Length: 76
Ligand SMILES: [Zn+2]
Image: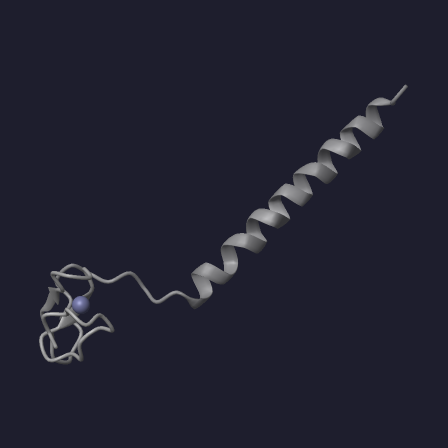
């Protein structure tokens, strides 16, 4: 039969492992991630191109992109 101190020790060790795992899985994400972007922050710089879906294969590509490998690709 387990004594009360052994049960208490088991609970304490279990709590310590749970807390350590929680800390271990949370820390790297917070350290490496950039701060959350605000809604009114300026958009990323660089040209923005609209993508068009290929009517044959369904691929999305910019208008000037090379055609896909299918012979009936409309971009060909
Ligand atoms: Zn295509």
